[in-house]
Picture 1 (spheres, rainbow, N blue to C red):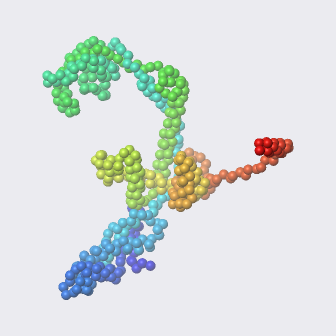
Picture 2: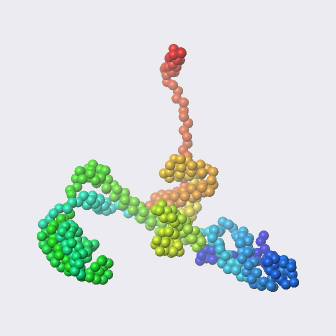
Picture 3: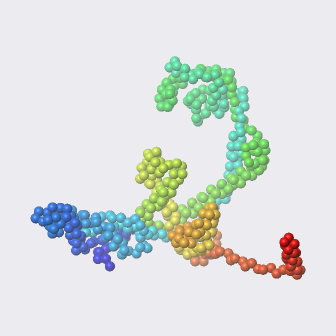
Length: 479
């Protein structure tokens, strides 16, 4: 039993345990004397040979306050190990730190993160409606996809009318700025665009309304903040419209579909597009359902965890994101942050909402799995790996690891428990009947059926005997 004087205080706001640990004075004095003797070998004390001066003389010479500070730092780790052994390890999680030290008497304040406290609330009362796919939305997506196909195959046809935005205009142009010719072309093509103008909004507007064969002279003042080489200057234009073409979409035919898609007919293409659109909208509805379900679960739950628990989750998320960045050619997250001009602290702050969300979701699913008394069989764990879509060799290797590695078994078991908890939540939210806690079925390996020997029918034994005799005779003739 430790001789330390330990007091505990739960910090409710942060879900942490404050340990105040006072070290007995005789133990502090012993450590002081030990440190003084050690330092005495290096310090010259008048009247004494090196290392022979009494501890009290060395302490007086070097200063008690200085030595106490050294002793406190040296003892901190050992004192913490002794203090933490007095706490039930099932109640705490990693992430403890030293908050403060008092020297007289020597007292440490350690902050120890407590295991998260989770109450999922009345999750069996949650109901979330699933919005059916709106057929009007399906048709809208189909029409958009058909239009995209036609847009990709559009053609420009000459028209005898004034220029409109979106037309393809062929023109001669001469642009002069400060007496210098900046642009001069006879067959210059451009498309007037009121959202993304060519030279300036005024230029595109000046061309719109002109007819084929029409000439025009005009000036444009480029603003100071224009960003072009002529910012703050006046340009003179001499233009002549030589031709105007408008977009013409082709007719949707079997030939067009066959040339541009994997389908042979318009009907087949439409059916595939409609199926894809419906699946897309259905997936969106399911994602919305899951999001609303988790939000309602969190609203009715109580979750308390220490800052260190969230910090570890942010660290895990940071590692996962770094693997993605490396796949895109970055050496590290820091390299990406340097390009973005961000600090690592700013980046981790950005990760915090996602880390907090997934941490709380996992904690809730774990709490529900425990309350529902879910069990996981060996068969379910093996089947989970087989359904992961890995290569057969990799799957077999993981199943072998499952049999001999308890840590890996616990990891896979936890994943399955969370999966079961979420599937239960989905069924509850949809209003389906579900088993009571402790009554949930567990999948076991199907029984192997015994292979029964088939008795030969009458006459078969004679035929088999004759075949055997014929085979034997043929073999003797060959010899």
